Image (cartoon, rainbow, N blue to C red; front, side):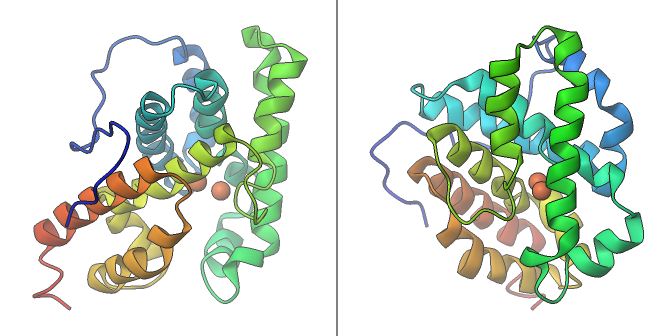
Length: 214
Ligand SMILES: [Fe+2]
Ligand SMILES: [Fe+2]
């Protein structure tokens, strides 16, 4: 199923060309934080979706979106690893304390790494406003916030995201893709993200044979 969209959306499999980019120094500054909770997989894939969403919504400040998605989950590195899985992915996981803690620590890390790379206070404030509450604040307050929120969800629709997140939630791939369709697609905020999610979900379900293995 493909959804008709009123804007130009690239829904081909997500990729990056490996060329040097303006944010390479920022990536290098968070290598330690990338080792927590598979951030070294989650952050680059979500980042690629964020760049694609910025192409679809040129009115958004792309640098704010790209820096915010790059840093948004670095705070997991300062939360106890056992608590992440015990509290962050079961029960009422959306309201778990660790969710608030990782947002707060993510803002700290942004304030630690960004000034030395030449970002000014006003820019850092815009980035931390998005990081603070990205998982726990019910409302998005700007187009940049919405694109970060959607990119943070879109990686889950790839086979890689399904592989990691189904394990975190202790679900089979078929159960997890059903949850994506029922719960996560309706949470997406932009038309472009819905088109990307459904294109990836269709590819992933076929690849993983979820109909046969359910
Ligand atoms: Fe998060
Ligand atoms: Fe995330």
